[in-house]
Image (cartoon, rainbow, N blue to C red; front, top):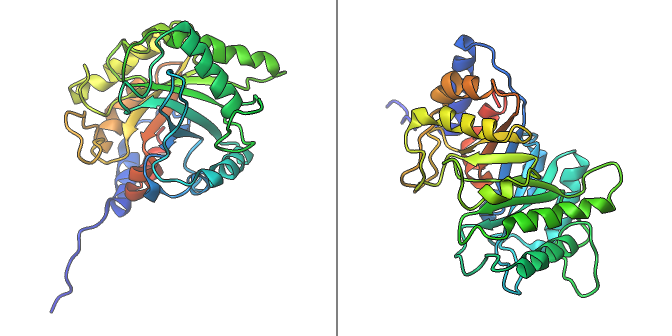
Length: 306
């Protein structure tokens, strides 16, 4: 009896797809920069394991999702906090940037900035709990490890006062000599402009913008609009590095997601990347998220094109 044929997993198919595409595509202008979000599933492995793959140049811890109303807390979906601090230092020792993302998909009652005072309080907590500050009585979830900066992933609530938060966070750079100790990035939805982050981005303080082409419910509804949408971002923020944010699946669609643009690998390689990499401020690819990426091997293929 002939042996049963089993479907080939995506992790085996993707390298074959990569070889086929490389054989016929024109040379592009890749940066090799791949950012991944980590912290949304306990089964994704540790932060250290993500950094040891050699796939990522930046890892974004997600999320610091309770703030703005006198409460400050994060949710790492079951990851033990006691181990994260040592892993942050390990990643940084490998010259991998580690950021902390604020916001996420929590309810608007969990986070918002209702006043200038609340923006000041959140900046103070981020500085003393996660960045380079220290103040007695402020709990540091990751011990003495300090993240390299803060990512704004604001999906809920009002856009008010995030510009003030950005200015206050950037102001802490006065405590560093010769380098930026508090780097600012943002992860807006692809529809330009992002109403919740537009005012903050206009400060010009964000060195990197990860434009998200996943999640559904946005102005970007057609696959062939991706390059055009990203070009709007690169033109609007010439001083920031613009990243193409994709879900870690061959279709570009996260499991269970509806209304998300499907950016297939062939289309990504032959059409999207050659167009967006023409921009002088194209930065690389952002992948959502480590859990999906670990299952699919997506970054292993895309890294060579990023």
